[in-house]
Each structure stands twice: as C-alpha cells, then as structure tokens.
Amino acid sequence: MIRDLILQESKRQSEVINLIASENFVSKEVKSALGSDLTNKYAEGYPGARYYGGLNVIDALETEVINLAEKLFSTDYHVNVQAYSGSIANLAVYFSVLKHGDTFMGLELSDGGHLTHGHPVTVSGKLFNRIAYRVDEKTNLLNYEEIKRLATEHRPKLIISGASSYSRKIDFEKISEIAHEVGALHLADISHISGLIATGLHPSPFGNADFVMTTTHKILRGPRGALIFCKNELAKQLDKAVFPGLQGGPHMNAIAAIGVCLEEALEPSYEQYCRNVIENAKLLSQELMNLGLKLVTDGTDNHLFLIDLRPLGITGQVAQDKLERVKIIVNKNAIPYDTSPPQNPSGIRIGTCAITTKNISQNEIANLAKKINDTLRG
Image (cartoon, rainbow, N blue to C red; front, side, top):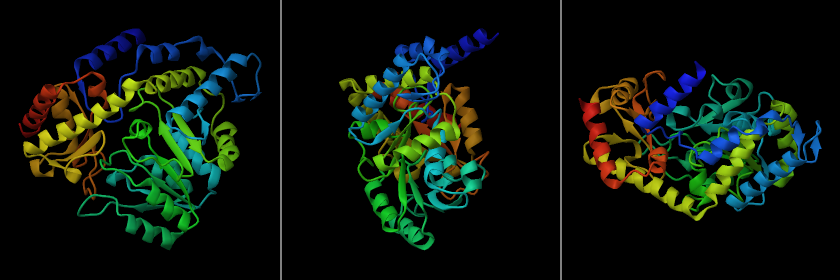
C-alpha cells in the first residue's frame, strides 16, 4: 500500500505544473544518498567527539559537507550541518543566545515572515517576547527606519531578517547595523534565497550577520534539512543548542544528500540555473500584470511573488483550488495587512524554482500566465 501511494505521488508530480515557491525537484544522486546505508548508522555528537563506535567514515563525511558549505558561500563562518529542518535550526539559534522571556524581533508573518520568526502559535512565540516589524503599508517594502525605531524602543537581544514571501532584495548589512547599534545579534534566514546569495545574485549577509540559516530543500535542490552558519565565537553555544539541546543523532543519510546538493550547486551550471529562476519569475510576473492581475510590490527581484486576489473577488483557497483543477499547483498566502483569516487569505504565492528545474521555456511561461489568468477569472 505504501509503495502504491509513493508511485501515485510520483505520477502526480510528473503531471502538474509546480509553482510552490518552497518546493523543487532533487537529482537522482540526492535521492540515492537519502536511500543509502547511511540511514543505518547512529552518530550522536560531532566529528572527533562521538558517543558511538564505527564512525571514521561518518566523521569524514560530515567534515566534507561542512567544507562544501563553506566553499559554496565563500565564508569562514562556523557551520553546523546537523539540524533536521529550518524550524529546528532557527530554534537552535534562539536557544543559543536567548533566555525564556527575552525579546527578539522578526518580520510579521502576513508581511512575508515565517512562522518560526516568533508567530504566537509557535514555540518561538510562546517562549520569547517577539516584537513584529512590518513592511510599509503603501509600498509593501521593508521600512528600515521603522525597524530601527522599534529596535531602539524595545532593545531586543536578536533581530531576524529574511522571509518566506517577500519578493524584493533585503539589505542585510543595514539590518546588521541596526542590530549592533542596539546591542542585538542578527540572524539572517536565507532559506528562500540561499542559492541566489551563493551565486552573487542577491546581497549576502555573510560578514555582517552573526548567524545565517538556510534550509536545503528549496532553491538548493537538496533534501529536507538545514545549514546554520555563525561567527566563530558563537560556535560552541550553537552546537550545544543543536546537540544535545534539541536533537539526538543526526540523520547522516540526509547530511550526505545535503553534501551532494552542495556539490551540484558548486558546478558552473548552477549559477545559470539561478539566473534563469530570476528571469522566469520576472517574466511570469510581468505577463500576469500585463493581463491585469495585481501583484504585491508590482513584481519581483527573486524567485517568487504574491498575487493580490481582492480585485477579483475571490480568496486564496478558492484560487488554489481552481488552479489545482487545471494541474497548476500554488499555495494560498496572506498578503501584507491582510484582514482575511489565515486559513483563507487574500493572496496566492507563486515561485519559479521547480519549473526552472524542469527547463520551462519563455513561450511556455507566456502560455502559463494566460492559463493562470483565465482560470482565476473564470
């Protein structure tokens, strides 16, 4: 039965157009690493300091993945490759520098932030005092002066930058300046744009931010997992927060698959892939605007954008369902200052990582835009 369901999902994925910004397609090599004998091995601890025997190969493997991460992002930051997910990775940063009740700042979820950036329903929102900053109500862009005002007023210990549905460039250097002026640390969550940063297509937080975190399953085209980078003076407390603070044994098969995706991202072709991702997002967003659809921030600088559905008189859930019926997969998404409930928000999010992996052409993008527009209106 399970095998049948796996085959059904494989068939579904092959038959649809995937526009979910946080999804992608991994290579056969990544899948092979995930299904390897590494899944049999327990490896609590870190290279050279484990709690089990038989780990010479495992130590060499994890060390190589760390080296690959440093090379891809051209950084001398310390790297932890063990986090099971982005949620765990963000929590590890929090637990390494915050105490219960401490104040930190993060972007409001409806304005493009992530649940783990302190939303009240999550553990980060329950254990710590999150002060939300917002995008400008008129432009829907980050307002760095307002971020500075809030930081000066609330004196947080940590400021989080990065987003899950923000379509313009982020000035990580400016946010680091704000954080350090008030005595705070800066965590840059680059999960959605890590590939763009690695290839120089988006300003980098490295050298300014104290922590940098990215998941590995989005634009990096790897398995579910995360990389946490930090300045070297924070390394010991970060590693303790991951293990034994939040996790037991690392998933070495996933770490190996992360290594494979990092090797692939170091190939010259990966930079061209990232350029194509941005070009396709810009083209698709422009085609949709030409057809009269309203986009938040009127376009994009990266791989994703939001469609404001209010002028069409439909909700995100309705739009998601309508598009799925014609085999176009998107996700409903809040838009800035959305007054609709989270379960049925006023927008949808569209991303181009997956269709770029499938080598979509410009002609196909024009036809796709028309199909999206016709389906939403009809």
